[in-house]
Image: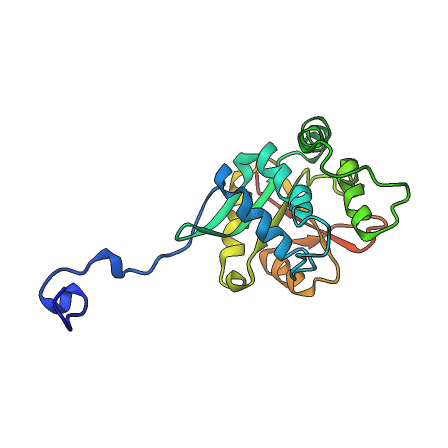
Length: 221
C-alpha cells in the first residue's frame, strides 16, 4: 500500500475483507477447546466471579461442571468463538439420570486418582467440592419431573450482557432432545437470576434446595 493510503476503496480499489470486524460465532465444541472452557469455568465459578487460586487445582471446577459434559455429551456442547478465541460456552445433557450413570461409570475412572476421596463429612471447602465429584447422584433432585435435561453456561465478563448467553441457550434448546431443561444456580448470584428470568426460565419447586435455586424452561417439543 502506498504511503498515506487508507483502505483500498479510498485508493480506487475494492474494499478488502481484512477491514471487516470479526463477529463472534456460536459453534459446536471441539476437543481443542478443552483448556479454554476450563479457564472460563474457574474464572466465573465464584457466583460469577473469579475462583482461580481458591482450590489446590484450578481444574477442579472444570472437572465438575464443564469437562464431563464436553466428554460425555459433545453434541450438546457449544462455544462462543471470537476470532479463534473461545470466550463462552454452554454444556449439558438430554437425560440427567443417564448422565449420572455415565459420570460414575466413565468420568470418575477417566479422572482416576486426581482427587483423593474426601472424608465423610468433608472438613474443608475443597473437600466439599471434591465430594460432589464422587457423588454424581446429587444431580437427581426431587421436583424436576418434566425437566430431564440440564445445562451449565458461562461467559467471560467482557462478553456478558451482549446477547451471547441468549444465543448459546437458544442453540442448546433447539438441539436438546427433551421436553424441558433445568439448571441449579446459586441463589446469591442475583445478576444471573435476572438473565434467566428474561429468557423465560421459571422457579421449580424443589424441596430443601439449600443454597441453590432451581429454574426450568420448556423446549416446546
